[in-house]
Length: 332
Length: 240
Image 1 (cartoon, each protein chain N blue to C red):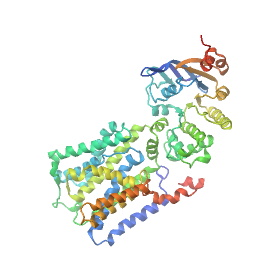
Image 2: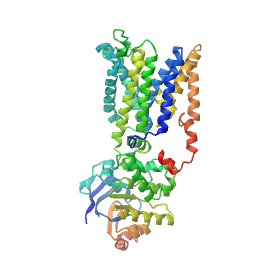
Image 3: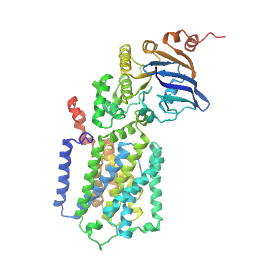
Image 4: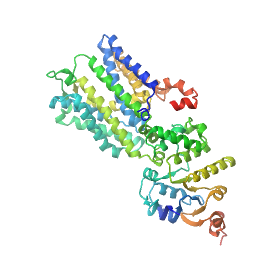
């Protein structure tokens, strides 16, 4: 396995240490608010890592991932409400639907380059939101309230405590982090980076660029859909303005870009920092309307100005300046 | 004597501009063919038609028995044509090693096999000291080398070199000629566009001359340099 998936011991140690810290940390938290923030961090981390495949690795900036987020959320909501299906099953159906839609829409959209792709995906998500807003089967503008106590809570993924949510979401964060790490130095990862760097050049060395871009788009759509499904079960109420607004598309982008696009842990770092800033400014400055967004905006500008490669550059600085011997490099 | 590439009445038009007109010639396996011609003769256009960057308006390109006229660049690469670009198109944000590695993955499924192959190609092209550098930080000569390395790493049967000697100093040029000879020994057929006559004359078996989109002459370097039409195209004829 190590031949194909380049995961070194160093990473496994760091990963396990991080996971252990994330598991133990809630045990010291007695109030619900910090736990709520941690749950949001998990959701944004999954979304950021999903977006990272198409936006970070393949360099195709999508501004429409809220569509897949919404599809994931709605599949779970409708599943529970109309069919009494367990979210554990429906979230994978949501992933499949999202990947199918990404396949159908991605084929024409990915022919567009740069700004045009960004604008077209934005339009794609807005169209999706308007369709859901006017579609009576999915509740239209009133949305779906699928709070259900008739079945055991592990079946409906509806708990009275926040702890189970946190651990379920954490499991998915870990899963997708490992997936990203596995793909980072794989053929797929290298091909996506080559496409980002220069599409013509990538084609000339035998890369079917359209196919790999589409695969990346589908993979990212599936992961974002998973995040949507999980979040819907946490809220137990969804409507198009909650799960499909434009600012979700933008936030997904922001999380990955601020953390460091095209890196394994960048989106996770971005999710932690951004969610904490956003939630705590909201809680702290609640007495002045809108002041939290002002502080949030200023902090974002400062981070972008001083760390153009994302927050991840804080960790990488030392490594970059270090001269590695060829032997050390080979091990990397 | 196996024909590896055949151009049959290749014509390429960009709107009203005829970039290539009725070009027919063939390349035999193991040859080094030099392609010369004044600026704007249509040499790079012909390269782009062969490698699939754009397809011909009319005519055919037959490679190794397959009609590749309408094929996409990645399909043509898989079939065994590697190319370099006149303006180096390296993957600037990636290291030299990764640049060649991506190309090696064309024929190697696993990363470890591709890495082994990459090391060989890099050693052959004399890029070993730069492998950890960002491709964007290389100088012109190193970038041209990297172009060749990337094309070679795809393990082509036919290599298209587009002005890989332009802008190189005398010593660098000698090294590059040396590299081309080594590539040929490894069994790869080469079609090269070159303005540096010293290089064309010393390495090519045959020379193809293009002028204003048409095939002007074809033959050994000696034949071509004595061809009256070629001399006229390069130096201009007397005004009458």
